[in-house]
Image (cartoon, rainbow, N blue to C red; front, side, top):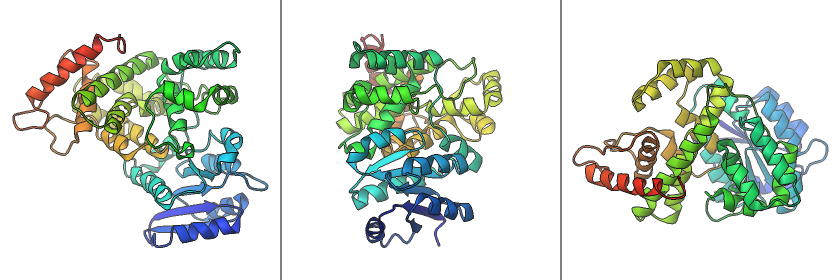
Length: 392
């Protein structure tokens, strides 16, 4: 029997029967089907599950309440809502404990793909305690002032989407949360959205207002130590994302790949917010170590946190349903220009991140894909981007 256990919860028997037919032949998973939240929690109290996929509207305890209970009791278990488009208001109330939203009717490939990606990222973080810390995230850490600005802007009758976007883009956590929501399968988009402005347009002011007031997404979240400079983290992410996008565009990569490079560079340090909030003493030791080179930093993160910041970030994005390409480009960071296993996107992300602290970044040895000639081009494109309005 597979070690991966999936629990499906729906009060309509024909839906459960349809799921059984849909997933017939997935011998690598051990799947259970129950008709209500109470039955689901009773089953989970006896044996653990890796993923719970629940309907939203059910009598008694609804799907949002069920996943809130699962988050509290079993934070390492991945949590998904499978619901219809008519349930948008209810889904807003379930945003906090839900990691992914899938729309009914759900294509078999989409459902299988979502579950498969969630199970795959579990290999990035093998420590169950760390999985619980990362899986427990409801709202990412952010300065109280940012949350107050978000409430003020979204509540003002005269505010515009551009006002909301300006607040969201000022904070890495807010940017990640709005991108997570709009990129969920519930919205049925054909490609990933990497622009906060586009995400805000798709959500709309009313939805953003409801989310801000509820605090379930745009809340302050856990506090972070004062020595973690959130503003600098945001600036580094935005600069690196701009560099990565410039490189990808100049290389002539497809639009989807450009988006992947942008998101991986932008959200590369997202996991640091959660790790530091839960392990402040470990972060103090990391700062005291004052490691300059990327390999030394990676080794120190593994020792102090139990995983690297990049692995934690990739794990979070995997739980939230971001594309496998983004996760793969992020998970192994930082990569060396001579690494023969690194993808071009991963190399671009690593290069872009280094450019946020260095005026010039060298390429690999002769014969490497990212050789000195290509690195020189990349440096030139980053220079041009640094002089543009995006970074300036």
